[in-house]
Image 1 (cartoon, rainbow, N blue to C red):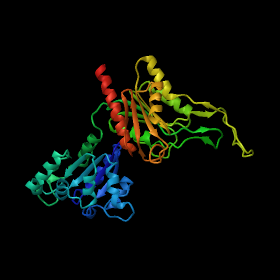
Image 2: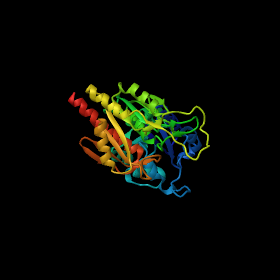
Image 3: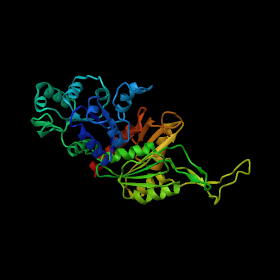
Length: 403
């Protein structure tokens, strides 16, 4: 699902923004509220904090070493900027590039879609200056939820009342769940590490946090796919998807994936599945009574390879995406893996980097396909997920044309 920056400005309709935030959350989206100073005179910031469970941003110059660049950090992660209510003042600022508070600065910094729900006096809404500003924003690609007609807070009767929360939420959801090749497709994503126990206390594992796989699952769901997430042990919250299957070891992940893969249109193996597991698991904790400890390991099932072989034998099957965590000769190893596993795409990343790969919020990957390799710059894992699924959608479209 998507991350929505909900801009709340100073109008009596600000109280409806609380229900907008609730409605977005009910549809599986995350919300961060950005309130102008005037908005806080109508609704308290603590109300939005209680609902969104996130700190509400009210000041562009809050204390803190990184406070002055927070609008840039948020701008690069949100999927939609929704302003409800949008006063004539904020509409004028956005149209004319005035960035004198957090919300207007966020608009100039983000490339996320903009959805505006105007709310103001009837005469103000019809004023030539306001109409011109609305036209300017529309020409830039902004979308609108038209205000309703009726009694306004000022006592007038006419058009200008903030649209109902359900209408605003539906408009936002339509942007966040666009029509595309993934809509209605069945997508399986495997994510996170596997833990291979050798006694009841200890295990062999890796540093995968599951963030990359979770980002792919969330993005696929945002695009309208029916997503099944098979996840190893993680400390992060799973996205809102159709089904979450929790596993621990490589054997459990193999069983869960293979049992479901046949009914899928896309399988993305983003999990860091252990290559080896202990031959024997001690029934009791292994005592620390020797200077060395020898563990005998055996290979775990090759889930990606088995999926590729199954698809090869059948002559058809889901779009298959694998990952290659490498520390050297990254593209060469990923290309060889793609051919060996009979995958459509291999997503290669250099896990020797400290700013990409395991257990960080950013990634820099190379998408390896039969047609060649495409390197993506360092960016949030959410953005990487979107780029990967763009390629998956192209494959789905190509298959549909050939069929």
